[in-house]
Length: 383
Image (cartoon, rainbow, N blue to C red; front, side, top):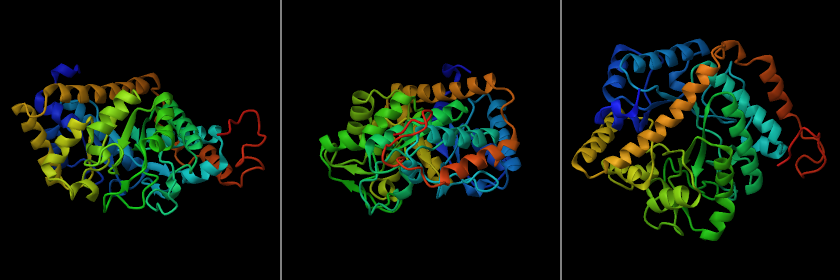
């Protein structure tokens, strides 16, 4: 469906990704999804029981969107590997990014990214909120910790790019996070607002390097950090900062993909600004897709506020059109990939012998030289 065929209300719905309760599309859930024409849904453990159930849920969600002439949904999940893994057994329990970082093999990182994506793709998930591109420069940073590939920006960028290539090769959209870097913090933005006081020169040399490499690798989306970077913007955290999202990410780094917020319900933003103004601040800053994982009342309030703002001219219609166009672009890529691979979605790849063997190989102690950049098999690119 061409973008101009969407009504204004439907366009507003497209710039939201929402979470919901339940493991099936009930009539009540279908009516709610249909009413708001949400652009995407975010799945959690609360939405999953088994691969068969998850594929049925994904199919029902897409069939509902199609039946009402809405664009396909982005169906997303956090499947990073390690401790942030929403889909448990029988899905393959791939290890953390930190382990891949110690291994230092771009080939292995790409293989793991592809295997994770193949399992997601089999159950109808179109987008992974991974890889983590944060450079872990603060040892006290527990919220990121082993979710990061490590403390060296070059290695983080190299392995992140490899994961992106692997996931996209298996037909799953990628989301690098948390722009412009959550690795130097010591607070969890779920419960407080972290502050990074580093200089612009340091941020550009360290925090931004993996994001530059991810953009070069073709990352589809970047997720923002609810972190205050005083050298760039002493007032607004990155998620709400035009200086960072438009000035740094769009203009300086040249990113043309989707900018997605981290969950707007997290305390770092939800406690610092009036709730109904947060989605407008994010859109004005340059975000395209607003993530609200919990609380249906807040999801609806945010939608209504954006709709009224566009109707009144408070938010330029051109900003909404720009966001919708970017979202439609990644949806089109996903749809094209599915059309070109019509026999891809088989559940027997979940936890298959090939993936289990890969998981075991990655968990083995690295060979001499692998953590120091020493000699390797010629097929293995060392980061």
